[in-house]
Length: 258
Figure: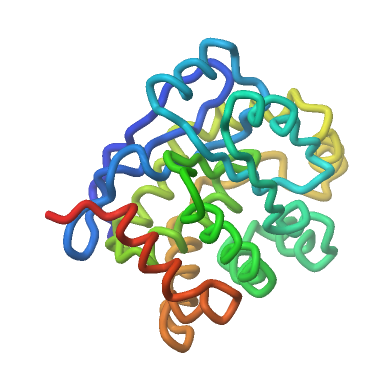
């Protein structure tokens, strides 16, 4: 498959490595507005300077944390005090890492297309709640993230962009941008006690020692699944609890006519 040329709009932070603004991506009838939707990895280690940049320069108003409870998200302790609305919406339990079937798939070669397809089977209501959060009140600019900013964030952002009419090749190209930061992300996660079990599994041979490169075919498969749903990606979200009004408002918010 081919992907569109894409220059990521990185937001350089000391305590996170995969934060970027999705503004500028091509869409039907225009482009994605800057400072509406951001994506990233864990924000637990942000420095005071990072927080100041996100508050003052970016104007951050909302954060969606897709991590599971075991990952010990600490943002609820301080984001609300800063006037930033925080939604904890675990998209999947460890992105399936506790599922023996998924563990076997990962040990056999990390089939992320299958993993993401399994995620979509159960994550539809959560994705609809994320959409509702984004369009309810002053929640943007909003940052959607998980631990690495690749899998759960990748699926969520792909659906949010797709329902707004963003070019599918551009969505895939944005997903691939995480590859540029993957080593920094791995090193940061390896230092966290919450992910000690992953290191132990890698050492014992239950998991490969290093995940493969970001595979664009996996996120392309997500887009194929939601586009093939009755009513397309909008139909997928409505079937899981979203409304057409919310989808229309989201499109108006995120797409800059051009």
